[in-house]
Image (cartoon, rainbow, N blue to C red; front, side, top):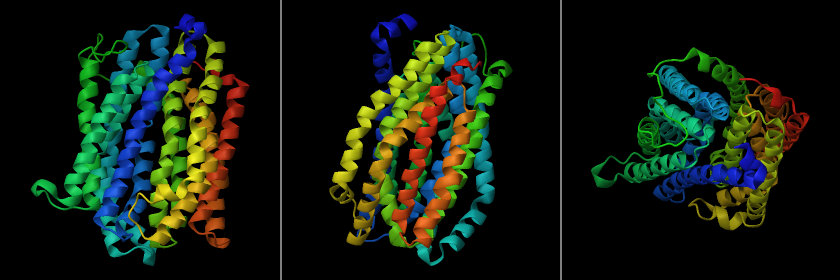
Amino acid sequence: MNRSFQAGGLDREIFRLAIPAAIQLLLHTLQFVVDTKMISASQPGENGGLAALALVSPICWSLTTIFTVTSVGATAVVARRIGEGRRQGAAAATRTAILLALLLGTVVTMVGVIAFRPLIDWLAVRVGEGASADVIAGAGGYLWWFLVFFPLRAVAVTLEAVLRGAGESAWPFWGGVLANIANIIGNALLIFGLLGLPRMGVEGVGLATGLAPLVEIVLLLAVLALGWSRRLKLWDRGGLIFDREQATPMIRVSLPVLAGAVIFHSGFFYYQLAIFELDEMAMAAHRVAIALQSAAFLPAHGFAVAAASIAGRLLGAGDRSLALRSAYRTFWLGLRFVAFISLLFFFAAEPLVRIFDAPPETLALAALCVRIGAFEVPFLLATESFTGTLRGAGSTMAPMVITAIGTWGLRVPLAWYLAHDIGLGVSGVWYATVADWVLRGALCWWVVRRGRWVEKQL
């Protein structure tokens, strides 16, 4: 592996991993946009359905991020074992990660079902007159099905992580393709009540989203169990048992990620309340803008995946200098991709938002948010790329601290100040988001530049 990278294969390996991961997230983003388009088309000229999605989507995204942190530890440990040439250890780590994901996913479902009604009642009180009873009901229906089927999502994300940690890029991509196709078909059937199914609206989107990961799980388990993967197997001298030797570094790497995710998403939710306490139009405009802005995460996610896998495998093989070089190279290659997205958001915001069926004043506000968000894109890429490198190395404490500084030290207080005290409304929230990504990108670059992460042992 080291010789091929030294011979000029580093860029090829980065692109081999980054492009399928980015395309897979593109499909997730397409599904996100299709959800928004279908809901807006089912309620033309109204803000209710879009507002319901805007209300509940941050909660679901936060749950997915927080409680699939085993995927970060799984990526780091599997990548390190592959780099060390310990295929049996990689297989044991894979089985352990699946069990951890299933356990955490079940915990989320149990706690979520118990806390569901108090949470919905609390949201109704917080948004007050900013959302109608139909908005609250639609958001609640979506959240219920998302919670019930959450273990499927946790396992699917973890299976993708172990395969990418091993350097596999194609199978997670095809698993994501199948899941997104299933999701879009399910949305169409349940939003509009096709083929004799009930017309469920926003609630139908939640049910389709909850069930979609099942097809991906079936495919990826077959890949690992039947030996279709060239790099990683599920059964390699061992049953489906919890391996403490592999679980210890996996949990040690994941705990700071969990803490960072809780820090960020607790702040993110409080920051979202700055939008929810405005009005229904602001919520709908934010949903439209986020649906478009999510395209910026495509290359950021792809290059973060590549950075994590490559750094972990190179450190496992003992090549620290090349691992450090890979961090910078992944960032610079990714930056070339996001420049176009940033320019597109700034100069074509109005035509982009018009693909959605919403009132003109809502679309005008969404276009302003998209144009503001254009400035965050390069710094988002820097944050995700360098964080991917650190996580692939198993160095997860620094990203946690940076997340705390950016979220609670800057984004949350600045969003509330600009949106409510200054009176900028939802655009103030987007200005605060840009400031957060600028700060975090600079801090992540500084941590990588110091180079202490190359000495991390797993």
